[in-house]
Image (cartoon, rainbow, N blue to C red):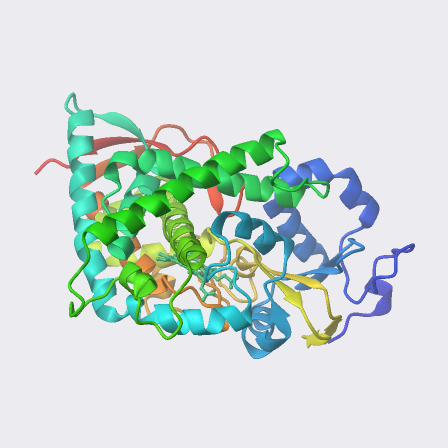
Length: 446
Ligand code: HEM
């Protein structure tokens, strides 16, 4: 139902039509520092105060946030043909990933998705298992050394980043990056940090102008570019036989027999996209899963006794801490979403963070209750991987990886928090724990 006009905040002096309730402009301006520091609280509070579809007091572009399950489905699925990824967030991300699958517009995206989808077929996802096992064996070795004296404190966030990067590069590109994983994950984080800093600064200068942020970002992108070149060179020296039954992503990208072979820029952009999209998200999901588990020791104990709960725990962690906490779209034609007019050219923010904590969708939304997923993943109101045609291509790989890693570490290591305070969240491109996630570990006695 359309909101009553008396619910509309009074905003004057700009032409953008106000079609939904939303927070007050003056208050928003006065709180801008706090909002930048903690956008999750602002977003959650704004929805709690004004409803499930709100408009922010921003003159251009008109900016809406969707916090309802049905609204999300309207934007991402039912009316998705009236949306595009021409948003500031994706434009800035494209500085890092180029025009890869994640940022590409529909026309360029459709054939590319069709081309890359087979690399994510069941056998390929199953092959990931082997890489997860190898990565975990490596982690066990490192932790074994670290805990020789009994216990050790490790940064779980860093450990998950490194592990996820190694698995992604092995599974998709057949490349062992273990020697340079820390450097590459740090380059990825720096680049993504730059993306967010640019999105928060309306006066951000073009990337070619060496402001401190642009300079850091350019160096990080350069490091990613070097990694991409290494990946391509390694495969050129060591190609799989062309009749190999299993083709990984790189085989598909480098295939000279494609109807229209990819240019080297297109290949670079896809590899960079998959490095970035394929590991940081998984690592973020796992880090928050560990945070939830050490703060709910009975759940950790249960996981040790019933390792098959790992999938439920991973899915539930993705609900409470969806790494992609906002999904943005530009609207290309006037839309109506749950009775609210959203004019063409508006920016729409669909927020898994808000929707996953919406009490109309979830019973006791703030509680960590893995068994809510025991009948499978709901169709509506759960979108850690997005929805509609742009649904995450790595979804099954990520869920497999996540569950295997939780299961293995929980059954082989004891883990505990080193303090009782809540882990502060930085809402960057994904949700990051401020200061990492230091945990005390020791080997489970046999
Ligand atoms: C827990 C882990 C992951 C999460 C939470 C996640 C989340 C998402 C989300 C929300 C989208 C949709 C974005 C939108 O609609 O604007 C997406 C798209 C995408 N993801 Fe993931 N992702 C994860 C893992 C992965 C992995 C493992 C890979 C690759 C190996 C990957 C590659 C991609 C790509 C290429 C796209 C763009 C798909 C397209 O537009 O066709 N992601 N992801």
